[in-house]
Length: 95
Image 1 (cartoon, one colour):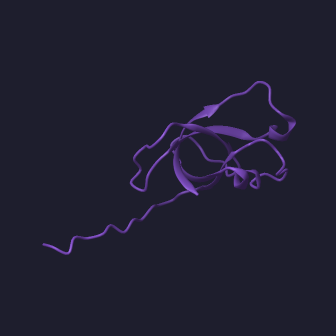
Image 2: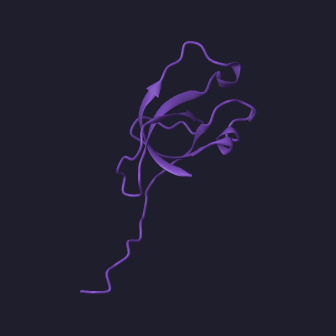
């Protein structure tokens, strides 16, 4: 799974039947410190995330399993909204 921040929505006037009713959001991948990495991607929202939310998402074939109809061409699915991220930083032995 990967971390991301929702930075926008994607509107499509025509879509495949398997995507009807699925909200598409623009995700900026972030690192464990919340810093952006890579380029934004579009993901299917199955958890009712919103702009500004930190989320975790999956890509590739695993993303397809997030929808009831798992046989579709989608390759990024938002699977959860993150409440908090704790990181354990290595501390220098020298002081």
